[in-house]
Length: 301
Ligand SMILES: CC(C)c1ccc(C(=O)O)c(O)c1O
Ligand SMILES: [Fe+2]
Image 1 (spheres, rainbow, N blue to C red):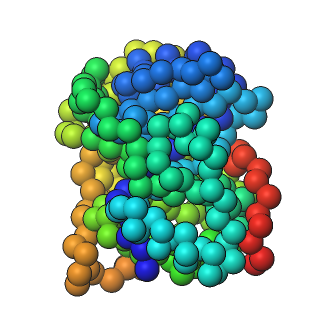
Image 2 (tube, rainbow, N blue to C red):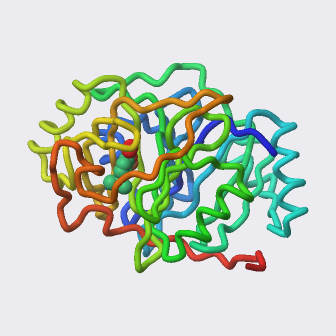
């Protein structure tokens, strides 16, 4: 099976790119790289050209998630595997690759949720390091989806995409993209609707969490959950809402897995205390918004 480097970027549809650009730059603390002539806005928290893209849209939500493979050889292996399994990978045009500052890129549609997933190995490496404005963001951490058919979605990620389950909690699962060490770069939570649950950025220390809470409290940005501590990955978390009501998370600290002899996935107790060891409760708006952009699945289920 093919090998990942990491979750590379998330693309969101937003109703007002200018407003959201200010939010992700000033409130989240990502570096705004450029807004192009089509009104597409790029941000980074690393030397990658982008770790977040905002697309103008009437319907806010999630557009796609991009995964970086270890190298060109692994990318080709993934392509061959997808073709063999009838997943119909679609190569991204040269023109769009240029717009994205990426090398060879292809996409498939996850058949259970309709989310478009992208695979690439090369993205423009920016000369100047990411300089934190206020929050020492280390990386795009994970994306979580709500899914109606959670069993089939987990099966797809593990059997077709080479993800490994790090933990189960009831029917839900936290998954890592092998051999990336972090506890999860994707998670799947059962719901009555397929939609975005949240996007996570990992931060360097606990002060980033405490300072963020005060920054958000002193603004008109709604807090959605936390600060608290998650049982599965042991991270300290803080969630707040973006201008379209989509949930963003900062987290500090996360269990890491070795490539070989990693522990087996646990069956964690489905209890509110598992989600927050400190006993907090999410607001009703937590993880409530984030339509998945509809893409026709070409995969036979
Ligand atoms: C409440 C959500 C689904 C959640 C639960 C646990 C973790 C973790 O262990 O890191 C998360 O990151 C979450 O977002
Ligand atoms: Fe999370």
